[in-house]
Image 1 (cartoon, rainbow, N blue to C red):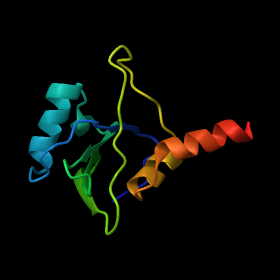
Image 2: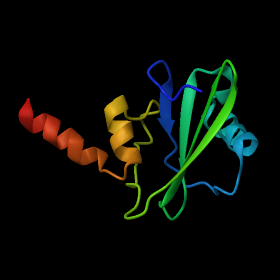
Image 3: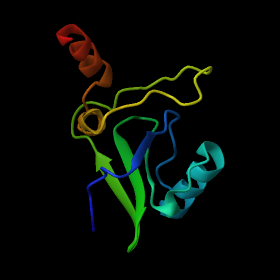
Image 4: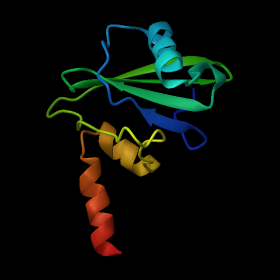
Length: 117
């Protein structure tokens, strides 16, 4: 199993999802609402729970489908918002996504980059 997502497009769903769902239901949500076919092996989709204490990460590779559950011991995942007029959303680096999955703030990283430039 490969946990290196360097060759994948990573998408974070900004609408909370009922995380009692498994891989099949969550991949169907990604396909229906986000037009992302996780089964093709090109995308990673991250779903956040309503309480923002838990997330599920879906991806596929040549050997099978994977579902990773992450529950924070402290704090919550940052609430993300997107502009309705921007259908492409906001691009994040892999480092920002990993920081987000550790419970960190994505905006704080972006502000720090702006100050150092």
